[in-house]
Figure (tube, rainbow, N blue to C red):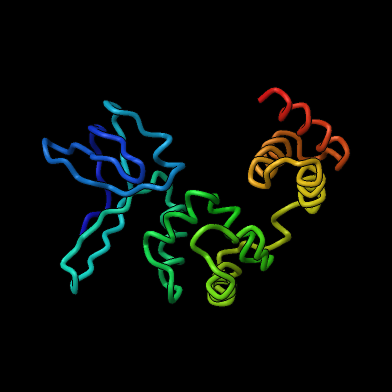
Length: 193
């Protein structure tokens, strides 16, 4: 079993990289966010999950930059109907915090994405809700102002994930701002992008 790999990125593809470790090229599948952190010729260290399908004699490596992302994959693949590929597509769209928050809030809209039907979304929420709550992720960890501010930006036509990331960044920098000030700062930041 491989726990981690360190090496030089030989190739960056649409869903994986070829990682050169002591002149051996490993194909490692990554989320879109992790792929964006990779460039040909750069040195990188990845946490590794190994998926072995003995029926089809296939072994695939999945790499992670953070332990949180790896933990998300481990939780997701325990849900019946969620493959490694599906889990990686979820992690390409949502950060671990966004995923845990969506599960804790039973937010089906956030989880709605290509490849996830309503039944699978319900199964993810049902099967992982108690596990997420044991991880200490609950609504008390997240300021309610954030949700109001996100709703305001979405109503103004901004994409949900971009609104979420912008609001989170502003609240991390200035946690005591009121909703109207957060929205104002977010609009200012989004207009410069």
